[in-house]
Length: 197
Image 1: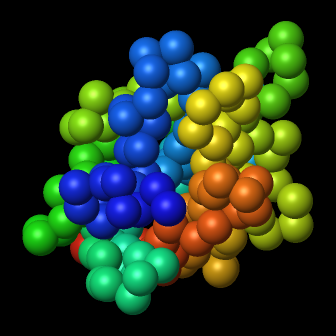
Image 2: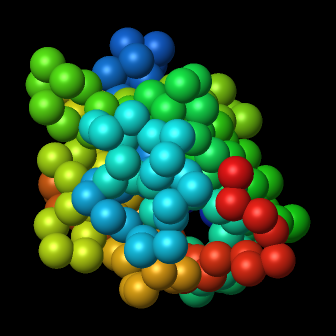
């Protein structure tokens, strides 16, 4: 089981760093990120004003979020996620930080591939992980970022929106039998005290 090979629960989302460099390059995210497509949350006018049309479906993520949930083994996890529109409205930048005692940190960049016509996400983490993900966009209220590596570690993040100010993110990975296995789940609430960037 992959979890037993890891030094800590928070490392699960970075298991690609334990793979060969070739497998790491072929892997894909976002996060936590993460991270979406058409009309994620309604109250996003300031963010959408600065967002490229192809990235507008992700604009609902913009802001500060507090998340909490559990790993598959039942241990608690808490984190913060911060999303900003960057580089002329072409990219959504996500900063994920686990709260102690967990220690996973990640920067994700979400965008839109105009040629392939799908969303992309790349995550860099504090364990040396570098993963790439794609998404066709929203399927009802769920956006799935799936690792498209041709070899090595496969994982995905599913973001399920719950109104304007909440979402649930579920992280799963393919185990040795090929089945999707839960890594962790968190429910995230928007921090109303923080301004939207």
